[in-house]
Amino acid sequence: MTRKLSAMIAIILALVAGSAYTAPNTINYQGRVTAPDGAPVPDGQQLMRFNIYDAPTDGVSLWNSGFLGISVVGGLFQYNLGDSTTLPDSLFDGEPRWLGVQVGADPEIAPRTEFTPHAYTFRAFDANNADSLGDKPATSFLHQGKDTLSTSLQLRTSDGELAYNFTSFGRRFSVSKSGTGSAELSSDSISGGQLRLNGGSGGSIWGLGGGSLSNPNAALLVLSSLSQAGGVSLVGNPDHGQLVMGDTSGLPSLSMRGVNPFTGTDSLRDVNVFLGTGAVNQTEILDEPGIAANSTPSNITWPLFPTLSDILTVTITIPNDGYVVVEGTTVLRFANSPASRLAGQMQIDTLAGGSLEGSHTSWAGVASVPSSPLYQSGVARRVYFFSEAGTHTFRLEASQTTGDVGSSIQSINTWLQATYFRTGYGSVTTITNNPGNNPRAEAITVRRENGSSDQVYRVDLRHYELKVLQAQLAAERAEMRALKAEMELRQAQKRQSDVNKF
Image 1 (tube, one colour):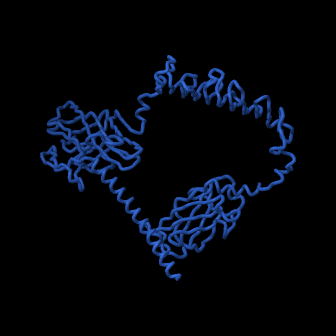
Image 2 (tube, rainbow, N blue to C red):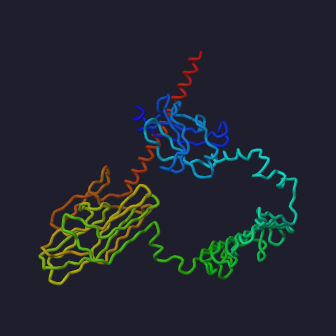
């Protein structure tokens, strides 16, 4: 019974730590056990085991509870990790930890759940009410509200080497270490409030909260080296806000400003964006998520029918649902011994080694082939709709369907491109052999090269997109109805329980 139940259940996990645990070194763990249809499993005991690992998969089990009978009511259960078997103090030492749950004799449920930072606060118990740090008593340290720092404070290692130097002068406070840079806080009437972090090699990251020497009214944040090369600047005042990114030579590669950076004019306070020379090139455009292309200059011989061979492939990753238009072009070479007729077909497909689809194939051929080769242009196109984000590979396939022995068809200089469109503007149609339940599908006749014909259908892809959205909406409504019915059932049970009390 447990094996069947475990194979069909889903567990919704919630991890609660910090103030929710009831005793030191325990974590309150809550979950809900449901059947595939979303209904809770029957009330009673479920045999469970909890493991804490050092990796999200495989890894080493650092702690386990052993199998326990856990009470489940209305699908809900809770257990304090550490109640039955104590959690070691060293378990949460700053390294990531994952929780695995096993129900009955079935394999552990995947994926494991990573612990939130709250679980690592167990280490704070070691420092609670501490009257010493290491082997040093509390009197060796500054006390908040009691001790003050004047001019300079030096921290040294046990052999006398200077570790850190704390310096106070005027309205500035500096923390430094020789050779590794410094941090400085200041407040004055010239630059306002300032935080500056200096690197040991001369680089700096600093911000002026109230102004700068050149512009007292501006709020400024600068991330750069002292040479200003490869930096980022944010400046804002009532007249102009600026975001400037510089390259390694110190020249702006991207500038967004409320004033023209070249003339200094206000430009009606419209935001102007300026890209440096060569900021966007053709190679970068082709690498964008919305388009992918591939090409080859090789001569590729088409296989004899019924074999289909890949001429070229292209892979595209789309960020959301939408349409992908795939187009392949090539130069066809009809060659070798004279043939009375030489023809072939090519198509766009997603399956390797598939079969020719009459509604999506492009025919090419010649009535006869002389001793010298003949050349033609070949084109194949196809439109796909995908209901979610993902990565897809498309193939330009081809097959020689007719021709005498010794004749051949070759592809030269082949190009294959996939373009992604988030939504369709106007009509987005394609041809299919099976339109499904689509009352607006238009029946058309496609004639083959041998004179035969096929009946196919022209369909608008937005019809199927709407079907997907309607199905998602229906599923959400069904889930809401199930939750409402569950709530009403619990209310009825409670009312009946109240009646039975009297």
